[in-house]
Length: 223
Ligand code: BG6
Ligand code: MG
Image (cartoon, rainbow, N blue to C red; front, side):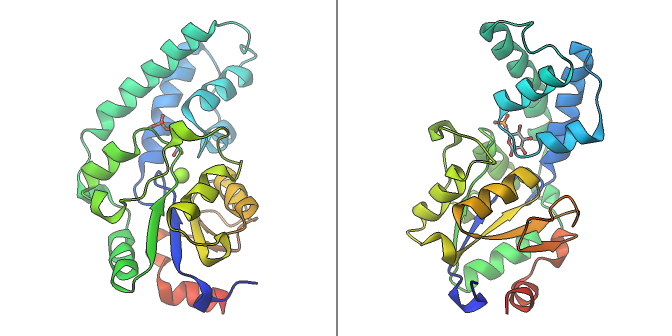
């Protein structure tokens, strides 16, 4: 088991971890589900967290039994419709949208020499980082367009550690989604979940709130 002293880097998810864009993604998908006449539920909403744009659309269509009703071109159009609504909300964001404690945590990590990379499934991640004025913290971002498989596949977290030139076991992956925790675990990194302890039960450690995520608290849990 990895000890706190072995940790050299952090691989961050973005939506729902650094900022609450998971709510904005959820609202935009909910709107599209209504348009498609697919019933919305908390279970569907949670299952979409961390899932790529096209995989999310497929999950929604499947939930409504409509997976064979659209051509690929129509699916791209539907996903674009959702993205246009989402981006309009992102463009209203400011640094005030950083979740509690996260700026201080990133500052502390940087001051103590930890390496940081971003492993977000979102193609809008650079835009969100820019709005939050956090782009400087993440010169190393995994390009989701380069991935063969999305979360829960480990690929994005494996690449996140590679960008830092660190073995996965020396990295902590930070996630709010069950699919993301699964990806971190499969990549051989230490998984830190933020949110509901039952939903994120597979994580090595879970914090209920971003404000609780500090190096001191992580050290306590890792030993
Ligand atoms: C993930 C979000 O980070 O990115 C998902 O949790 C989202 O909800 C996915 O669907 C893809 O985002 P985008 O911005 O490329 O559509
Ligand atoms: Mg997330």
